[in-house]
Length: 179
Image (tube, rainbow, N blue to C red):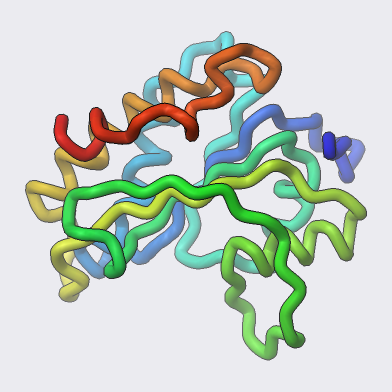
């Protein structure tokens, strides 16, 4: 479903990239790092159609942004994926019990966008395997290398949603994982 802008001041977004994690916990900051690398590489041609956000965690304030996007790509660290490896999977809104906190999972924030604004964009989560979550700034070398390759890979596939390369998730991610 295509979601229209929900705020008159906020134009519809073709692709919303959300990198989240704590940059003060070593590799947990890989999501914001990847999205920031992409933001720095975007030229004026993409400025109107791609929005990049870096967050500490997913909060309800992201729902209007998500509802105004045609697709959302969440980038986050994962301890379930081998260090330096990447997985990409399609996700959907997921009704869950009421959230008592201020932190949401990607399916929960998609559901909030659906409930509050009536639409859910196409969405994926890109999980990057981490080596260290110790207190400290900076990524470990293996995860930093993966972040740079992943940023290039995602940037390449940020063509408008109706272009053939939109099917980036169907491509083999071996290039990301093996360099």
